[in-house]
Image 1 (cartoon, rainbow, N blue to C red):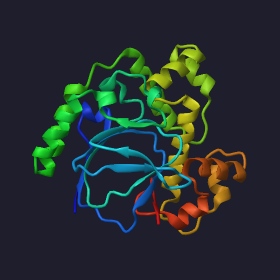
Image 2 (cartoon, one colour; image 1 turned 180 degrees about the horizontal axis):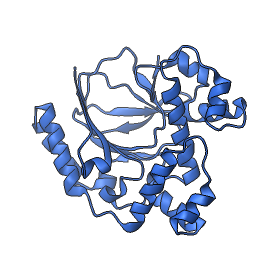
Image 3 (cartoon, rainbow, N blue to C red; image 1 turned 90 degrees about the vertical axis):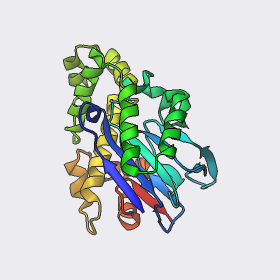
Length: 272
């Protein structure tokens, strides 16, 4: 198996959290739950075999993903094909940082996975061909960095402001005063929410819930025993029941089930 994971240097690294290339990945299960992580992703399939999204309840095929696809902000988990015997390049954009590459409002893609042409135009298929022709994994990543740099547009003043408050929310996973941050932005609350949805995809409150969920995942990952009442209190929940309901909404698991069923990665739960 080949697995490479790089974080680009600035200025690209200000917008892209990782570029991952892997080939011949092997797992013993055929499906995974991918949990919301607050990012958007461009996935390039370097094989011709489609990957699939499944109905979360029936596990029947719901959508075939071919060539390259863009995953918008997700507020609930996706059940997806495991990447057995595949070759992929995955570009993960930081929250609120994808807009300069696509110049489209991010909320249009909420809870959607669409063909990458819808977002990046036909040139994304030329990019895919370049990746396929190159055999060396490190050079594939360099091709991806050059392509992304060519797509990066100037960041607007309002984009900078939203990015500032994205960071503020990420650093305040327990609780935050949304009215206060809107006032500090210099916009009305309605304008601020509109801009936040444009650049991030979600409302500030929705985004904060996902940030908090991810902080909880990091806190409990690979733990065998967890004091759930302490976790609920630590992350600003009124009571344990509210915490469990929120956790289940994002993951399809209650917290204890997550501990029992977790796999090798924080945001992936094997569907056995």
